Length: 101
Image (cartoon, rainbow, N blue to C red; front, side, top):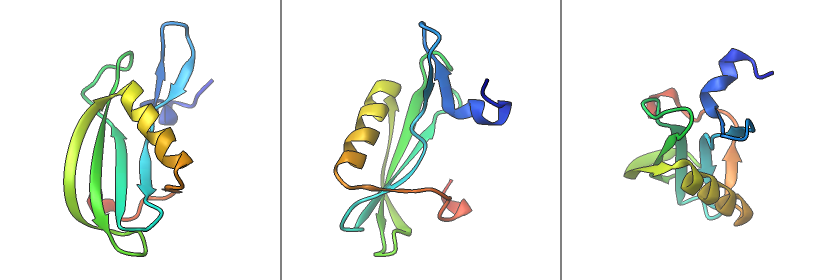
């Protein structure tokens, strides 16, 4: 069973499988961009949407200037998340700065 505090980043599909919504910061290998994923709180749990924010960032992976924001469906977010990770984008485990949320 998933603790209630973790339920905001999960969905349960029609086959009762629990899937994690891509959430967090990914930093490009050359450190010039970072991409932030967060579940749209207004979307349904069954068919969630995800916001992505593409940021210019410093060599330390700190966001400096917002380039664009997009709202995408779960499948596209999941695919993009895993494709970027397979292309050496780095997951930043902890929030970089609370002001960016």
